[in-house]
Image 1 (cartoon, rainbow, N blue to C red):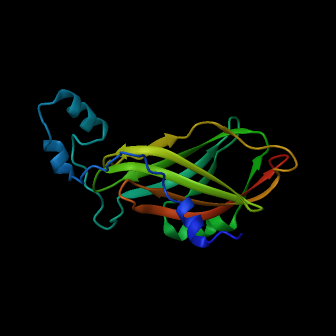
Image 2 (image 1 turned 180 degrees about the horizontal axis):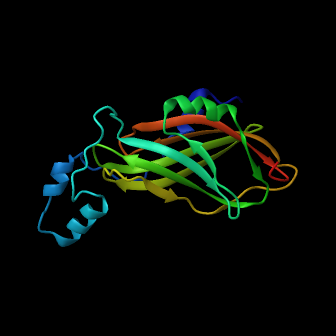
Length: 197
């Protein structure tokens, strides 16, 4: 039986943890004033960058700016996808990159937070090849606004190997937060080959 597009879209949503309730949205000022005498809460607020007020650029209303997603392999230059501007997303779709079979790699993301605190930022990815789908979900975390970019490295993975796994893969990725706001979504592709060329 053929799967519907709606089934695939549901598969591309973030997973829900039973019993987890999303906290009420607060402004940076509200967070700064929250239990000002609680030392552990003040350390948590400092870890989110809430001890100082960093205004976001007035001409850019985005709360999360994903600058780049990179594939990191020891001994090789990173393969970098520039996600900083929506106009570059079409270029990514047209230029698949190569991953050598069996190699250990990790993905990493560089991003900025602007204007307000973001909670539960996640990276979602669905990879398809010959009717087989593989979904990945990686929690990035909660962050406060900063004029400096954050970087998050994902756990090490190993690319599949063998003749059955070599070939072209289609991928769809997005960054979404606890509020369900999709900050960037794009399609891309890669090839698994016997070597890097």
